Image (cartoon, rainbow, N blue to C red; front, side, top):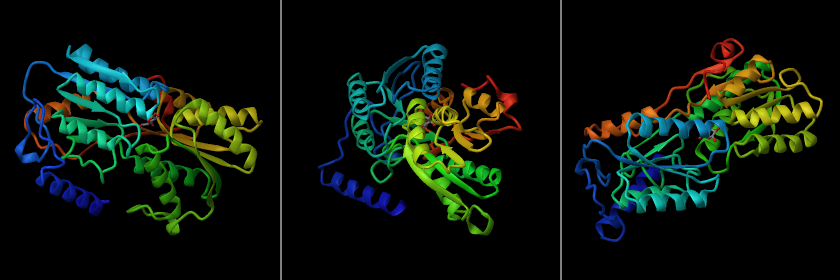
Length: 346
Ligand code: AHR
């Protein structure tokens, strides 16, 4: 990863030196100490662009609400907000429309990590600083601290590891697992799969796993449910027919886990007893399902990006050098603490 990033950066700089690739344009100017990063001057209010991926689950709605609450309601600034309706092409077009309105900064979650990376470079070239929230882009194409200010978000690989660790303990290291993956090409789907699979294979960097692996934990099927409840339910229905011996489900988000619970119940299975489920997000419905005994655990992934986006943006305005990854720390919910947080999430 590191070396391909560096090669790409060298290639870009070479192209820039030849005057072919790096366009230095726009009204914001550029910070000389941070290569091509556009700067942001201090003023009383700003226009912020926000290109949401979709509004198809409580997590997305909570993220949008958090941005509106922070920038519109608390600060009284202008938020140019769009909704890509779960369509990557639309998110690219939405960003073009936001760029044309020349906001002071664009803050957004890229729906897919490779497809959106060139757009980050285009925004940079238009002289508009970018902060990526919740999802990151492919660093072999766009580099935080150079092409965009930073990525603010969770450690998705570690979320996958934490889910696997809990499942290994809950099943005594023996399970036939169906994995419901998130949106194909999305950063959290890629990393949550890696963290989970590496942990049970005993290859997770720095994590001591018993005997180096859990050979009794087998992923018998793995398919995308696109981070939505309905697709999670439909995929689970299909995979269940082909894999009736399933004993555990790992879903990359709570919505798909809730969909899987519905599919299992419709097939006469007992979630939480003959099939153990673990997922990610920590939404209210998931905490309810834990208390009901249907979902085993969920790793938190916070959608509340408004305050931290504002704080990070103002640190940048103040000339602070921003770390390339502003890491969000997540909690963990299971039967020991779910009741305490019921109704307090999203
Ligand atoms: O990018 C974060 C993921 O996207 C959340 O886990 C999921 O629920 C959302 O759609």
